[in-house]
Length: 309
Image 1 (cartoon, rainbow, N blue to C red):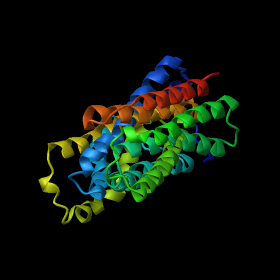
Image 2 (image 1 turned 30 degrees about the vertical axis):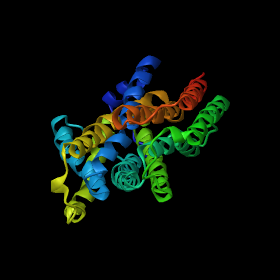
Image 3 (image 1 turned 90 degrees about the vertical axis):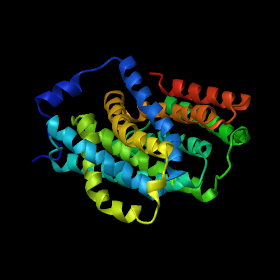
């Protein structure tokens, strides 16, 4: 068997089709909205449920849903050592390590801080992808990234307009570690889809693989946590993480990565913290100040520059 397995006829037809750029951006926008709302959903969940248990249940319940889906839809697992390796890395980072690490970090910091830290996802995705593909990133990518980072720095500088009670340095550091892990998982899953394996299989089989590892730890994570006393908001947040963040969000993102390129499409993730901050205003009664709007302008401008061809 060769190192890179040839896709079958259906996969070749799917991967050779070139969708309009607007379609790629639309699907990426849905994925980014889900990603931007993930910190808020996680915050609701960890306020009443142990953060480790939230991370474990996110993947365990996702796997319970994903397994019958791959069977009903007859989605075969990836074949070949290379594809299996990408799936293993994607599952380990995205569905095992990230949910647990991020759940712990989110319990120790504020939603606003998580939004700001999540803003570096495109940088890690772009750098990891360029190292993996052994190619240089385009000059306009770096310019756009620099402009967007100016906006992120402004968000840090003017974060007094947001409620940052409960934010700790340890929590911020743990969230940053989770973001680095997430970026690695994004690149691994995207490479798998670029090699002809579909985004549904990448997501669902990744959840199944992650569930095989995580499900045995559910009783241990749940022991003595008082999860039975959690209210509707916490369970609603967890349900969103399972169905949207760990399910539909990954499918959309991997499809967009496969069709639009990892580094270039990944730059759109700079918009995610703006979504998080907007949800913080609407759902957590935080204040959106004029400086924050200026920062948003830099971020969106940087995204626009990075997408120039």
